[in-house]
Amino acid sequence: MKIIFIGPPGSGKGTQAKRLASRFAIPHISTGDMLREAIAEGTELGRQAAPIMASGALVSDDLMIGIINDRLAKADAQGGFILDGFPRTLVQAEKLDGIVGNGSDPLRVLQLLVPDDAIVRRISLRRTCAQCGAIYHLENDPPKTDSVCDRCGAAVIARPDDNEEAVRKRLEAFHRQTLPVATYYKTKRILREVDGIGPVDEVFERIEQSLA
Ligand code: AMP
Image 1 (tube, protein in one colour):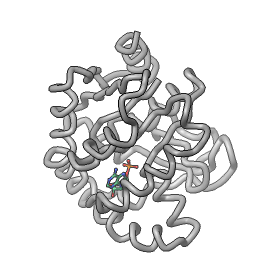
Image 2 (image 1 turned 30 degrees about the horizontal axis):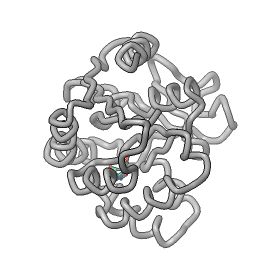
Image 3 (image 1 turned 90 degrees about the vertical axis):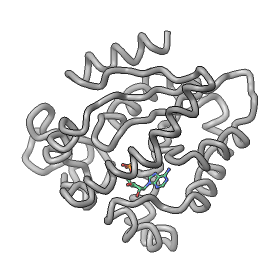
C-alpha cells in the first residue's frame, strides 16, 4: 500500500494516518513530524524550518523533496508507506511521481474533506505531545492526566503553529498550494474523497471502505 493523505490542517489526517499505518503495518511518514523532530534536535534543517513553520508558511520544495527522497529510500518504506503532509505543492507531487515510479503498487490518494470553520474549532482544542507527537483533543480525547502524555509521560502542549494567525496562513496555503495537488490526482483518477466530519472511529471506517 502506497497511500498519500491530503487534508487541511486540523482535518484529523495525522490521527487517521497513524491508525492506518498500524492497520497495514507500514510506516507513517509525516513531514511535519520530521521537521518538528529536526527542530527538537537542533539540526541545521530544524534551524531553517522553525521560523517558516511557526508563521504557517510552507518550507521550500527543494528541502522537502530532499527529505522525502532520503526517507523513501530506507528499507522500511520498500513495502509501502503512508505519506502525511507530502506532497503539499504541485512541484512536490510531480517529483514524487519520479521517486515512486511506476511500481506494481499504485499510489492511492485520500483526501479528507473538512470545512474551514470546523478546522479552526478543532485546532483550538488540539494538543500534541512535545516528545512523541501523540495527538489529543481537549474535548473528545484528552490525556488521562492534564497536560501529560498517556504514552510517554512528556508534556502535552499546543503546537506553536496552532495559534489563530498561523492557522489562517496554513489554511490559505492549503487552498492555494495543496488543493491543486488533489486536482492533479483527481485527473489521474486515483483520488478518493472521504468525509472527515464525525467521530474518529467513523471517519476511520469511511477511510477503510474507500480503500477496499
Ligand atoms: P503538518 O504537521 O503536516 O501540519 O506540518 C506543519 C508545518 O510543517 C507546515 O505548516 C509547513 O510549514 C511544514 N511542512 C510540512 N510538510 C511540508 C511539505 N510537504 N512542504 C512544505 N512544508 C511542509
